[in-house]
Amino acid sequence: MSAGADSPAAATDYDVIIVGGGPVGLLLACLLKQQGVRLRVLERRREPLALSAAIGITPPSLQILDKLGLAAEFISSGVKVRDCLVHGQNGPLGCVSFREIPDVHRFILSLPQIITVAILQKHLGQEFLETGCEVSEVRQLADHCRVQVGERTLTARFVVACDGSRSRVRECIGMRAPGHVYGCHFVMGDFIDRSSFGEEAHLFFTATGAVESFPLPGGQRRWVVQTEAPLEPPRPGLISELIKKRTGLDIAAADQLNESPFTPRRHQCDRYYEGRVILCGDAAHGMSPIGGQGMNTGFADAEFLAAILGRGDALALLPAYDRFRRKAAQTAIGHAEWGMWLGTRRGRAWSMLRDVVLKMLCRGAAARYVGTFYAMLTIPFNTLERVPAASLQSRRF
Image (cartoon, rainbow, N blue to C red; front, top):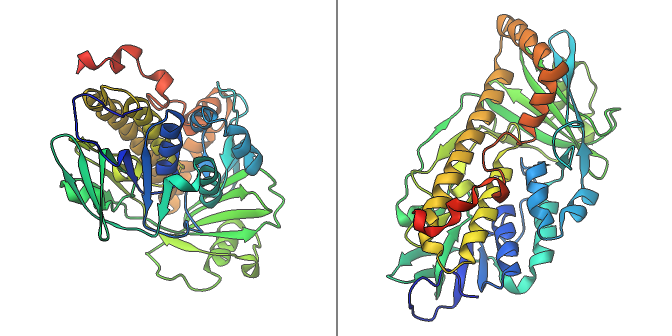
């Protein structure tokens, strides 16, 4: 199949070159491979990141993975989080449950990104993936693109940037990515789990800062603590110290396996494509990892993009990709920002007010809506099925 065969063109090495072999780039590659598209994934790293903020996979993403027959493997590899218990300054406030959300998958799947990447790589096959290579230049001609990788020049009908928030491809096409750095800071770390929390997530919101806790497969648990300032690196035992101070829980520093400080930021590109170069995932948009919406938004980008790049009128459909995926990302950015803002307010007065708000949100009908909200079922166009079919007719654009 020739992707985007909208006009006669010179022969190219590939139909699609994907720059970036993270979860979003690999998912896109798997979906395109399923359609018979000639493709190549170029990844700068030789090994995937061992620690990433991306551990939550939402029900819409599981629907997308099911198109590849991979949802069952993902689910069996992860932990089903069905309940999230919320604690305030003086004790429990309620529970956000995913048990009654309107989806066949009534949970958030907790799965480290390194496992997500491994499963997708295995499904894609090594012959489509090249690691340890860095793209230095992308140039567009009338009917194809040229990609410079070291001393080699590769050609493709389309180039898709899945190379993250500091995208080199985005720089090559001069696309702006206006953004904002938030004024809050965190350190996350994975620990051997000796708690009694099981498969529950726990959120603690206190006057001195937030603590979040999520189960991981393999008898581990992730802890995320808010800090007063960016820490590079954090002092040894800091995560355990702040957990004890804010929650009263004793989490042994000796059980800590890794750590990573981060300062959340957001960005949203002016447009998601320029000619035959397309931005996808974090290259197109970025949001606070608090709430776990970023990677899942990128998965929905990949599903949409795969559907149009496998067609003969791909160029004519790129405005639709830009329109719908920008709308979805903007909503997800807003959701992540709202949740982070509420959870990171410090001080006694803010803490008392937050406890009142959260107590209302974590009980009864409100809690059921909040579960739907954090399962990303309220994001517009969260899967291709929710995009009006008529919008994918190229004559509309």
